[in-house]
Image 1 (tube, rainbow, N blue to C red):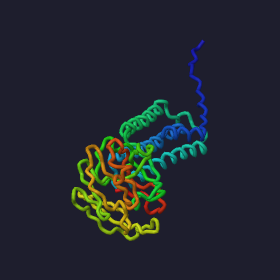
Image 2: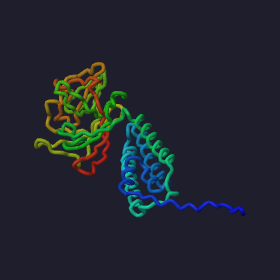
Image 3: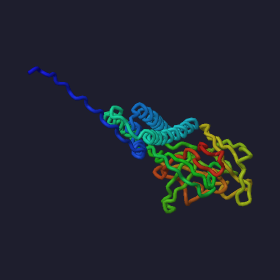
Image 4: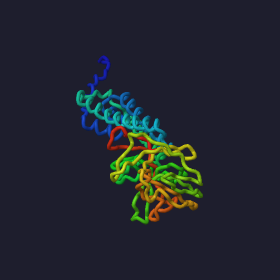
Length: 315
């Protein structure tokens, strides 16, 4: 009996695997790029992940600084890019799954690739959360005209939360202030006097340590009407060069002339930019503001009534 060589029977190719477009969409939202791994587009998935997570890292770096106007613009652009790329990636993965619901077995990503991409996304989230754990932005709405013309009634503005916990207050900073004596109401005012400063108002002009603060006419376009009187715009320049806009009426108000206030240790003197109509350190109900009552630093206008002020930095 002759030996007959044995040959292995040819194996049948494994059938294609079905992919569901809704699952591809959800996976991409849960972890950037994973939806593309699911539909067999590994390189495309990594490209989306690198783009989104790179934008997240840059945003986290920006959040470590007190944003200048250029950085604020970059922050907004990157924020839109990050969100847009993330959503576009989810839609793109869903479209691929819809057009090619069957995927060959050899095109599937290995489980190690899934694990590596998810781990990279988690690592970036961990790093950025550690960088910004004390830097949480939030927004406020302006209900009164005490900060006109800088902040106007109805403005939404963004603050750096708990900024003054780790940063020294400076003259010119716009701060949110906790007022325990007024049922924990939150005020928004500008810091003008530091501990040890002598502050006074004479004829509507601010004096610091016996010297008048430079005040010049502001843009006529910022003239406002309040209680049938014009609120005239002025530019105030502090001794350190910080410039900002204030408003006051031509008529002499009760708060336009004050005694000299000497700011105590660990306290601050605050004013509203509407010098004619603002409850601030000039009145007994507010007085000097203790350091622990300073909360957030105002950064920029997020949503004003007049669109051309969107993104305006609050100097």
